[in-house]
Length: 112
Image 1 (cartoon, rainbow, N blue to C red):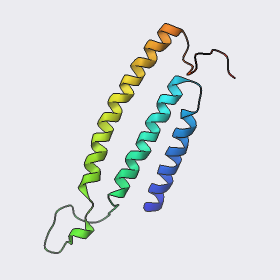
Image 2: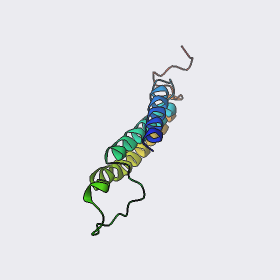
Image 3: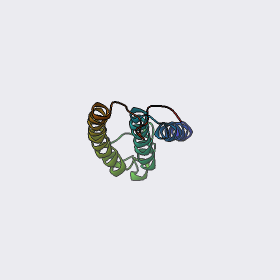
Image 4: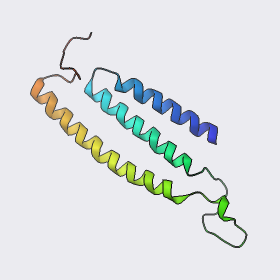
């Protein structure tokens, strides 16, 4: 399970960095979103990937076998903040595109 999570984090990070380096603003915003999702998965993975363990402490369940809830709370908060900043970025993108007439990061219409 850890291998699948590591591969997913690596693929999302590399795709996010590749999209951040693109010349269009929308691609940069999608790249930032992918990068934030990769960081969220990383923080979630730091809390421990546990399977087939009940979430409630009992007499026969050791506390070390449970996942840490603090990274899960941090990821939930990061998802909400990431959604709000992505919405703000999209509004700024639409306003910038309306004022300048293009959506290139550097303001040029022609590719380099």
